[in-house]
Amino acid sequence: MRPSLRALTVFWWVALVLVGPGCRRMVKPEAGEARTVEAGVPVGFGSEAQDAPVVTWDFGDGSPPRQGARVSHAFPRAGAFTVRALEKDEVLASAQVTVVPRPVLRAIPADAEVAVFFSQLRGNVEPLVDFYSRLLGEAQARSSLEEAPMLSLVLRELKGEPRVVDVEEGVGFFSLPGFEGSVGLLGVMDSQAALDAVVGELESGGASVVNRRPAEGLVHLRRQNGESLLLFADRGYLYLVVPDTDDGELEEAEPREGASTEALAVVKPQRVQDETSQVDAIRARITGMSGPGLSEVPLVTELRPKVGTGNVYFFARSVGDDAAAGIRGIWAAFRTEEGRAELEGWVASEQNLFQGKSAPGASLLGKAPAGPIAALMVSIPPEELAKLVFGAPNSERRQRTLQRLQEQGFDAAGADSLLGALRGDLTLLAYFDAPAFYRNFIRGTRRPEPRGTLLFEAGLVRSEPVLGWLTGRLKARGQPFEVVKGADATRLRTRVMEQPVELTVSADRLTLHGGESLEGRAAGDVGVALRERFGANAFEPGHLSAMVDVGRLRAELDAPQEVPGVPSQQLPVARSLVGTLLDQLPPVELVFLDFNPEEGGGRFRARAVLRSR
Image 1 (cartoon, rainbow, N blue to C red):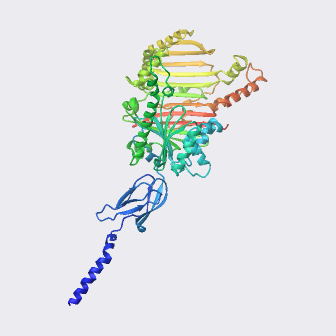
Image 2 (spheres, rainbow, N blue to C red; image 1 turned 180 degrees about the horizontal axis):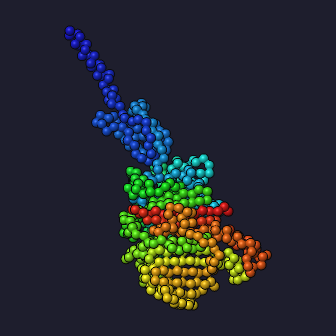
Image 3 (cartoon, rainbow, N blue to C red; image 1 turned 120 degrees about the vertical axis):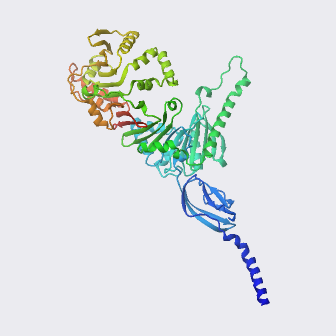
């Protein structure tokens, strides 16, 4: 029995000696399952358990290995990586990690005040560049876009196989509170190559490198005008920080009488030092950012569903007078397709805009002749109209507006009183008269002066302030006019650009008829035609709607085959000359705008249509 006990004891000692060192490996490091994460977002590996082994973690992305039982790592770029837990050369555990691009909104700090961004480059930049090229001409559009360093790099990369820019990520610009300037950001695949490319572009534009720190992935630059720039990479994005600087401050200080040269000598270096400190502070705010950034800010998550998709997006949170007036923020989407651009946006408000009130509809739209080349309708309460024009009472904007009016010779108090006399419904229609235009162009002033008709109508709650303001303005301008008083209205008749203008003021309405007669034009309900054309209740009560139809203007200029009083051989020459003049203008066929207050805010829409050059 004793030999058996002795043998058993020896067996246990041998087992402890042989297996004991391996007992620590009985608790394996936890690399986790295969997973998909975003670039730049920290991911945890290992365990915080008391008996978790300390190992070396190799993340497979070229970053230095780290030791620990539990580590956190942010992959700097998209790709597929194998994370390994090592003890010397032995792999104790591993996991596959697929890193996808980091959404641009997560790369913008949560406290950004304004942001303009493409959520993804591929499929969004190209349509916008195409629209811009049609608008300005390809050469001019490319030239202006290539002046922006990051955008020029994007355009080059999109032409071929992208090597530096990550076309699945985004590009944008944003501003931060407490910083007078803007920050650009661009999703990249190779941070160092992108950094070198943008530095090269800035240097070719006259900027010089002040300080380069490759280990930190940043470069300080200064433009020829003294403007300070900071370029740096962080978690899959390249950032360019550009402070706003007064051009006057960037000029060399001129010696002043009594000023020492020593004092002048320190002015510019001190400014340079201040700007450098400022942009470095912005970098610290961005690189120290954690969490979802702007993407999950409550205001953003509230506004995004209000608007459809777009190629480029705009966000702004309200500050100053707008915030004091209860405006919370704006979200808008801009989209383009084959010569057509549309903007849709939402303004969020703490209470119903215009206090939930609206003004009457426009009666002029229901009785005016068909075919205007421009139309404007405003239907909002008069006190809100005053706020729209001047700003809220006692606000800084109202004070600035009234001061500008006084500087331009206007009676600011009288203008305020005038707006108070309005009911809130204003309508303006413009018609073009091609025969009158050609007669004047060929036989009259021989200048391409507009000829046509303006119709204007405004509802009134008081007529006296309006009549007083109009007569005062005509007298102040030295404009000859005739007053015709009737039983129910007063008419003011004058001439502008050799065309008759008649203003009629009655107890509840102001009307204006300027220019040529509209006799012979087809009658119709202009309001119905506009609503059918633009939809979404445009030109209805409670809306602010406007449109300019340049395509109709071109068609009317091309229509006349003969004009009374104009020699038949001269008309084709005049039409050709006018067509050449129009071809020098941007090829815009139509512009449309509409704003409609709704529950909790207001929706705005805009549309621009281009013609083929």
